[in-house]
Every structure is written in structure tokens, then in C-alpha cells.
Amino acid sequence: MAEIATLDALSGLMARQRAVREFTKDVVDDGLIEQILEAATRAPSAKNEQVLRFVVLKSPESKRQVAAIVGEAPGPGRTPWDEVPVLIFVCAANPFGDTATGAAAQAGSVYPGIQNLLLAARAAGLGTVLTTSRAKIKEAELRALLNLPEGMDIYAIIPMGWPVARIGKNRRRPVSEVAFRERFGDAW
Ligand SMILES: Cc1cc2nc3c(=O)[nH]c(=O)nc-3n(C[C@H](O)[C@H](O)[C@H](O)COP(=O)(O)O)c2cc1C
Image 1 (cartoon, rainbow, N blue to C red):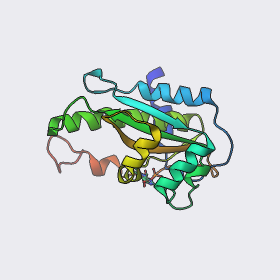
Image 2: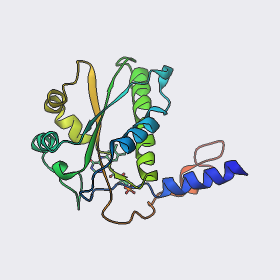
Image 3: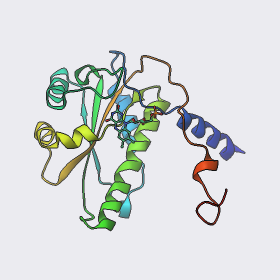
């Protein structure tokens, strides 16, 4: 019974996990950020390599430098990069190699941690938006700004702060559309 109650609570949280792009100017405490990062570290990784590293930017000067490099803010109705309370750079080295299986192990070791982070932030009442493309387009300049060691790549930039608006339920395909029984195409 306890497990069912927990699953319902977690499902409710997941249904209200959305991309938030507009934040108030309110500060996010370091203690809370650390709790959220701790949740991210709890994710699984291939061979338990725990590849994720996080560079957290709060200083106005650092964020201005990011804004100057990255340019356009993340999405419509967005808070500009330099006004977002916290920017989390998700970084990782790849110990698995460039083969197809290595790439799959690497991606599979990065995104569960990111999802943990997004959900933990949401549970704390914070908003986040996962962004990946700008980090890749501007990776060379961002690497230099963050002083990343060789082999350490940027996988995402996650703006995080207190949402301006109430966050409602996300819209997703129903299970009946995405899940099958025994063979692809056979109704669940
Ligand atoms: C891999 C990935 C990259 C994304 N990149 C961006 C981005 O660059 N800018 C942005 O505003 N949202 C970005 N998003 C957020 C998606 O647009 C958003 O999750 C999706 O539209 C669903 O919106 P919802 O979660 O609010 O329902 C990204 C999401 C993922 C999973």
C-alpha cells in the first residue's frame, strides 16, 4: 500500500514536470541546489562510472559571459540567460569509447541523471528547462569559459529558478499509443 501511494505521488510529480523558461529574480539557495545535485548523482550509469559533472553558475558576471557566447535565450517567453538565477552545465567525460555501444552507454549514463535533476527541482517547486543544442553549437567557447579539462564535454545547459507562472500538467501520448504486447503494433 505504501509503495502504491509513493508511485502515485511520483507519477503526479512527473505529470507536472514541464519546460519552464520564465523565472523570477529570486535567489535559489546553495543548500537546495546541492540537494538537487545529490538527486542527480543517484541516477544509474553504465558500469556505475558516474560520469556526470556539474558546473553551477550563479554569478552575474559568469551568466553575462554565457549570454554573450550563447546569444538567444532558451525558448519563447524566456528569461534571458544572464537573468536566470542558476545555470547548470551538465558535463561528462566518455569512458566508453566512440563505438555505437560506447555512445549508447554514454548517452544512457548522462540523461538519467539529468532527469533526476529536473524532477528533484520540480519537487522543490523550482522550474527548469533542458537545453542541448546551444551547448553543442558553442561548445568550444563554453568549454574555455568553464575551464573544462580535455575530454570533458558539455551535454546540456539547464536554466533553473522559481517559475513565474503556475506549472500545469504536461501533454504526453497515452500508454495505449506507445506500448504494445508481445509484438510491435499489438495493443497493450
Ligand atoms: C534533448 C532536449 C533538448 C531540449 N532543448 C531545448 C532548448 O534548446 N530550448 C528549449 O526551450 N527547450 C528545450 N527542450 C525542452 C522541450 O522543448 C520540452 O521538454 C518539450 O517541448 C515538452 O514540453 P513540456 O515538458 O513543457 O511538456 C529540450 C528537451 C529535450 C529533451
